[in-house]
Image (tube, rainbow over all chains, first blue to last red; front, top):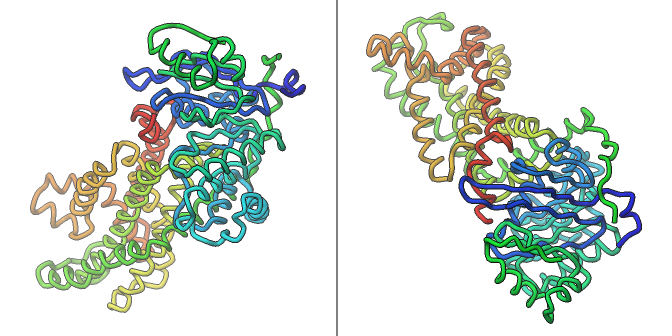
Length: 258
Length: 284
């Protein structure tokens, strides 16, 4: 990890966050810290609480208990600063299907107070990087699923956030599109130092060097480097580690690996 | 790895120019969406025109309108109901842009708006302004067609209604936004349209002067009197003749504020209904 870490607050600092929808507890005392310029994977089955955590990080819902800080900015008390730091790719598609590719990007720019000229410039630049320049004037409706996701990632980067959060971004995509997208995002981390929090239930999206957070029934079962987790649990690979963790700790125990 | 550090120096907030850019972007998107929904535009015009060309013509002989302010002579029934039909356009427009908010929220577009770093009250207000702006060309197009039907107001009226329409458009949009935050699903909202649009429209001075209602039912008269839609209609009716109905102005202004505050409250992440509604996007 980078030497900068010692003088920089973590990209994400989640401290004692609990959240419930009525009687159902979605998150239970979650504490996680993610260093800057890290590719962190939030691994959990459907219903683990990943989307809830994302909704809290992006202030769609207020934090009921605990604190979430993005590069030191508390989402509750400094929401504007925190949100400026985050680029979000939600699980459901959030593009305007009837608007063109570039119109979607300039709309997003406007939402961040970036004027048309500058927004257009950044849009052209980002579209070139995701090889969608020639589709700039096409309606989003006519793009493929993989292209839409790439566009959503480009849009999330348009205001130059330092943290990119993606909620199951490869759902519904074919193998090649999945590989393209995960490769693209990994490149952003390596080449540009963007921090990434990637939520998924697909274990094969985890690479050896990743920082992995295993979330299960609203609780963090383990957090650490893949190699450490595998070694600590004495299992051959991440898949076995995940199976072991989620089977051993269905919902009641307080186990905390790593 | 040391992690616990003081909060860094805050990047400066947003400049007025950035606020303006954001508002412009939201209005521009609403306008584009409107242009892409041509059937919505046609429907929004056909509805009042049916009332004007068919209903009003049929009722012309049945319902005589005596001289009441702001009219200085006997007026044809078509002339009487024109302001009400202008407001009908805005009522549907307000409900439809709220419907699009429900739809947007379910499709995730609302999330894009709400994760903008600008204050949420500003984002929602901008969304309201955008919906109102889109209603204006619809109303003026209707008036242009009505003009060929020989429903003519004094020229000053066409200018004077603009601020009245801005205010009434905001009020009806805010009401719709408030409803969209309460409505749990699209279906419920569609049901609520029937419970809101029709009662609001019929229990108002849009189709008949209230003194006539009073003769029929004093209770209904009082209901009409407290219906904000009545006051929106009267505000526009007076404005069309270059006059100000101060009572209606106060009621519409007050209701706009109340509905807007309610809607912003309802979309507030910590206190509002959004958080209580349940889980994000239907997926955990």
